[in-house]
Image (cartoon, rainbow, N blue to C red; front, side):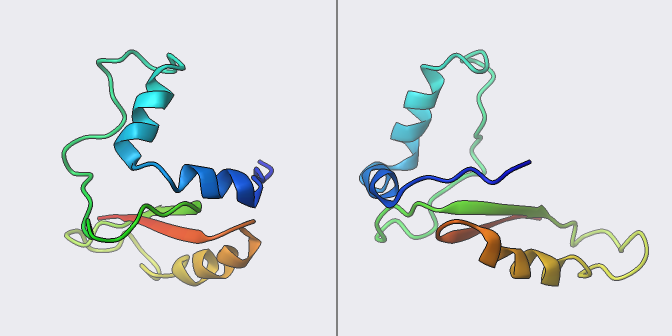
Length: 97
């Protein structure tokens, strides 16, 4: 899948709004039923004094409570970090445990 590009002007415009506002606008697209949602109470702002940030997410999940299924549990982490340079703008890591 090709990486979508977005110009700096659009990133700056998005930075003016918080996540709930952006989510409310996305809801207007009727992508999913409004009662389905795409964020739950686990999503929270850990640093409310910082301004909103905008960038390109690199996502990963990890199960720290379970032993690795085999091989190196951190094997792909270095590849993920190296992939940040391929993102067309600010990199944001989203890591789920």
